[in-house]
Image (cartoon, rainbow, N blue to C red; front, side):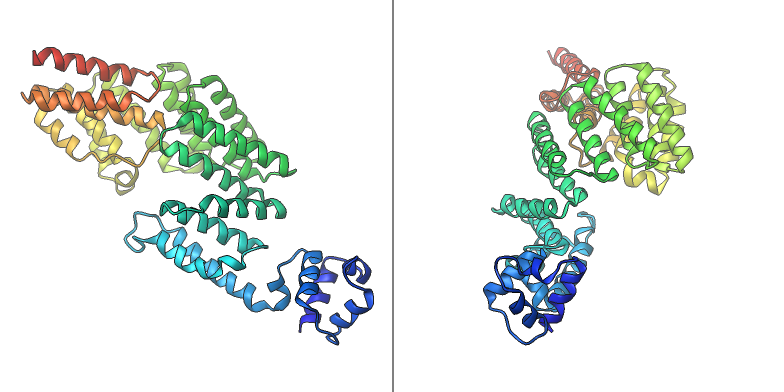
Length: 409
């Protein structure tokens, strides 16, 4: 009964009849409503819901809330399926269809906020208008409930849109604005959410070339992770720092972060961290030690692993092509590059490592006597590197283009 639900919620919130009645109702009328001896008007019902901090639907019955919970369960199942999986090729359209019938009822509570959040992501991915308004509603709901983890995810999402378009300065600006708003409105930020904020701040700082601030943020996050004994994103932070050090040819820093990553990988039995260390050791074998046969043996060993093939195959196939090129096996190097599939990466550090693929393709084509194709590949590499930070990879792409141009004269 309606009155029973109102009384139960009032007692849960430790409110007296007088406190709940406030200035909008008399104590006597509220007592009659709670005892199911009077039916409130919609205006009175809205007032009571406001005083209790719940949605009107929560007072009218469990049906609406239960329906939202069931809808959210289904929505989460679809939302958490990787986009590449064939089960849900139109996952965002399905999400929109599931949430649309409830969208006008979403106003308070976790279920409403989460459905509104996912709905915003889905309509943005489908290039539909209105996602910003929906996302603002979800943000406000999380702020009201003081749920910092989901509010943090929304802030990161907003910055990620600019980041994926390679507008790194804009992404940093949006992120820092979001972080300030989150910290101003949430007296307590959950440890996982704080580490998410630190990790993403480091990503954006590295992306715009502010190495000093990025390292400070990275070290702050690692110290906090250690203090709280929450080893969340530890491997990602070490990987990011090591890759940046290699890009800037800072050997000492690279070795430091790789050793930390290896220690973490062994301690946590985290295969991906150890594979990353092996990838860097193979890079050293090729570029520093010129031990190409040894590098090839290791690469073939790792490419035979299903787990490696799933995550690191583009990187290992690229290194295989490099080793074969330096050994003068140009046809085989070209075949290795044919297996290279550009992963969905957007960070300039990752892109700097991956964009050299076209430079090596140009060198291989040049050796095979395909001058025009070599010129095209070399130019693609230089063009790709234009918006990225200066690095040894970027300099390498320019040098390759010069080499190919000389040979073509």
